Image 1 (cartoon, rainbow, N blue to C red):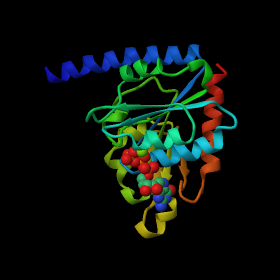
Image 2: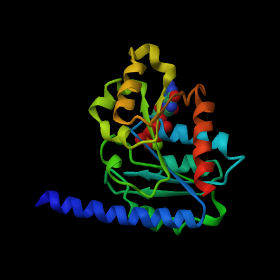
Image 3: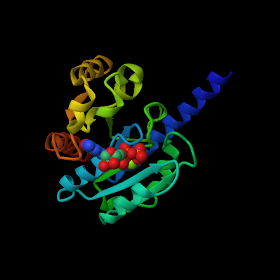
Length: 219
Ligand SMILES: Nc1nc2c(ncn2[C@@H]2O[C@H](COP(=O)(O)OP(=O)(O)OP(=O)(O)O)[C@@H](O)[C@H]2O)c(=O)[nH]1
Ligand SMILES: [Mg+2]
């Protein structure tokens, strides 16, 4: 009985997700769903990508958080349109919230909308939010076994960025293990090694993100 109810909720989320996709496509906006654990570096990486992409694209951000608006304040300080989505304790964002929030943006004045999902390797993976693509972050201090323990998020993401690569030597982190398991879960996943602290790998990640944006908004 419980499983049946969950299935219905998911189907309904899928319908709304498709509607969000259509709305974004009408306005030629690429939505990037950024996923990862609390503190993996989602906000830092989004800020780094914004620095490198803002000359070329008009960017907005939706900051998902269980409480507070610390991350939204950081984006606001960059002078970009940002909306805070407070989930009141829920561990993921649903498509209906995005559908509602889209009305707060002037979509014809945007090319890219980043969504920072709730810090969590589990539930956000289960809910499509109308994204054009998913970028998952795994930071070095979390450990190199996380793809095996939380496969869905990596199986459903288009790219994986191993962040905090500047800390690799302190954690005995086996990046090959992560890459091997990520590709076993998802043969098409693009894997990057980055540091939002010292900038390592961010040009490569930016080039890939930019290519995906161009493919989306050219359609
Ligand atoms: N050493 C190092 N620290 C980093 C890097 N990226 C982020 N940090 C630090 O890690 C901490 C968490 O980064 P955030 O960007 O806030 O992480 P987040 O995933 O947005 O966190 P939540 O929104 O709370 O889930 C901050 O203190 C960052 O300065 C990195 O590449 N290397
Ligand atoms: Mg954050």
